[in-house]
Image (cartoon, rainbow, N blue to C red; front, side, top):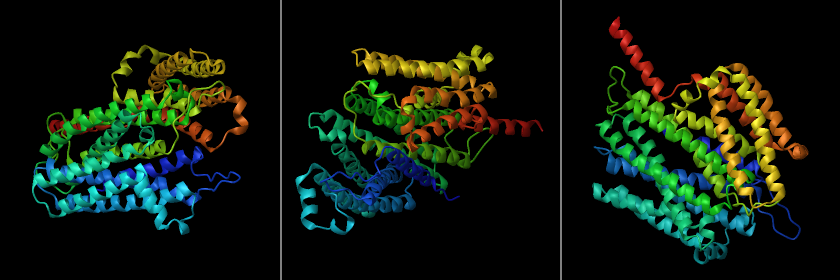
Length: 494
């Protein structure tokens, strides 16, 4: 069976472009007397950064799994590591040219000025980081290609992790030399994400090609993945706290909305991995499926879905890096529709997916699903107008109001996500009432509604329909195993 799990990462490209388009990041800004950055540069630079990060993850994952974690070496993983490392180099070189085009607002036909490129590489932190990346990755390629021992692969992995850490010095955290902690944390965040994502893809490839002792590999990778997830969550929280003025920025800025979207997807990934681990129990040998146990095809299917979600995170991450952090919350700032929808629907649904035991805590409310749907819509209006009133007053309590709004929306969302599974009528009520509630909160801005607004509304309607008419009966790792076990039991009884 030939696995192509890395293809799921491609989902990040449309997500990246959609977010940037709705935020105006792909639109040429024409100011009198100032040069205009070409539209082609605005489009290709984010895609190049995405390709760089994906190549980074695949390189690190292939070296880590093929050279260190797997019981036996894999020629395919070695080829993947070299190919993705070369792509990493190409992406960094392309980044140099595209950055010159963006900074100097030059068309592609004029960016090949040697003096401009030399100044970028030698006189800016970004340029020096690029040079260091090229050198580190270049040396790592030679070691991967010619080294045959685990020690040599460990050296290559160390060089690659340093190269992956370096971009953290050039992001929003690296712009302020006072935020050393943020720069270091962002670098660790990127490196750990590469270990997790690239490691999963490489593990899936190793298992798909029939690598020896897959159980040993999965047991080792499970520990590494857990450590990586903890580090990703901790460093992400630190960076968000340093970049945002306070909780209110989560509700009023596009930057905060993207962070909330990343939180929702990360919770889903944690839940998926936890179910995956629980379903496999202590039987990590997927080479031969046994009664009620996980086989190779089932594992690869789960891994494919997990990689798909990881691709979404990468798209959101690049979009976040291309979005300016918000300033202090001011009077007149509006609560974004995206934040309301993410707090009410996306994050609560991700939490109930991760912790299904929460469903039993609201069992009594499932007897009144229609009433819960109506109350939920009312709470959205209350939360949105309440926070808007606090912002209008620009009082010292705006941050407190933001915290209460977040807690209210997530709590109502948890209850709603449970009751939507109990009655389709509650889903219909929510499908109709939620757009009305969002319109009421932003009724003064209706004339300015754009593609972004309608995209958020479509996301909200899709999440409600997903929960009310399909997702409550969806499959997951635990259900796959239960189904497999049930089939085996019926065969035995027969």
